[in-house]
Length: 181
Length: 393
Image (cartoon, rainbow over all chains, first blue to last red; front, side, top):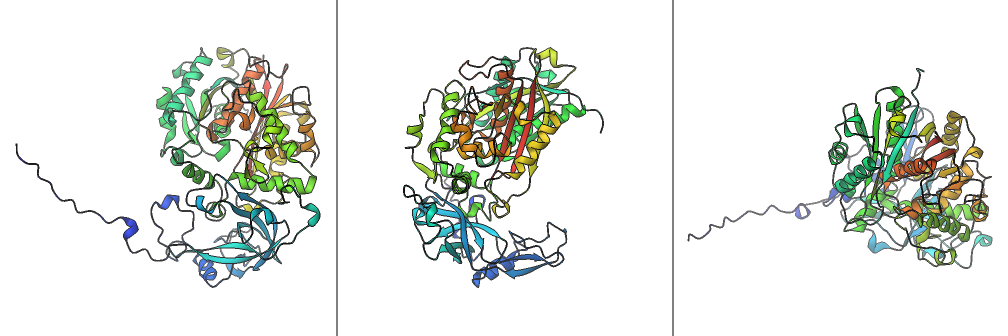
């Protein structure tokens, strides 16, 4: 019996091994939560450029003055595309929050338990949702002050989150049994 | 507006909901089996249109183009309208609304609405990832927002603003699980959840515990609809569609407004009741979207069943139970039946049809029901979809 010829297969390099650089997510891309942020990927690249400088920004309509969230390319009120980038306050107060103690999405399981909440920005008519770092969930309070911070993920992209400044809040609403109200 | 034809649900079936050892296409086959058994006068060639409610088959079953897949699995050859409807948790009701519109307009004569979802995956973290992209993924989902933390914030605000208690949340869960006990297709059939046990279950997203949350569920359901000229071919007890309403005013969580007053539901239900020429007080039963216990409480208030802030007391006083103002979720709700996203709205319609025909288990049969409401919210309660049914006979 003739010996089988084994043809060496030239292995294709896995995508992960290719030079990534900022903004090139690793595969599988469709399980990646973070937005693409480069100028060749989104018209909102300025948002991420400002975040790198520690500034949280959004768009405001040049025509009717509407402040948008999330930032936009077209104003939903007047349907025009003349928008300006404006800086947002760097501090706010917690309007509502909870914690993910189970059922976290892929890539976030190791972060459990983590706190998320809605934050009223000081001096701007916006209530942003985001991750809240800095305190255990049972220590967080409605009304507590948080500041906005930028963080960097492994491939170099950036995003925003909140961090508690100090424990405070409406004492009367605190329930000793759970401590989260 | 040109004359609309009158449309009724004339039969339907629900497969066993739960953690099923079965695939998406197999669930569609089971829905077809159940439908043709439940409606003996229905032949495959009668069905000119098929609407397939499926929220995330791309994520849960790695499958797109599911409308022809479902048609093939069910042995149907649609020749008027074939399409999938996707509206997250309301995908099933969207299929029925689309079938209703098609028949009312004269484009279809006999349409099937089927809902299928396979949610239990080998990796539940992937299933949770699918749920997180129901939200505004790059702005809200990215922070870890799935449904439990959002509805937990609703509960937290409701507790803060109105003094709603964990015991009142548990009253919703106890009631719906009790009804599910009398529903063999429910995921939690033959499982009891007394209130003291519910209050000891682990927290998922505080203040919500495991018993406050509906499940990741595999399931399917199908109904057949037709117009007044053909109804009698299929049934003596049609469930007439008398009104519909829908409203959506935001998607990103920053634009939600009040967490505790669901304005979109107030508007959608006003339109549903107006078009049916009834009020909330006329309802005998309501299939409400209890994805979480707090959802059902906020829904009582937005529907006008009780004043704002009194939803917790409404359930604790038994007013949404047998012997109360109306019966809410006699099927067992999403809490007791499980919540296969695409199938839920259709299973609710099957329940209304069977309640009107008075053929469900006597432990959950509403006595002599005439008017029924079906409600689904989707996502972060940013869409509300409703249908009002009247019993024919």
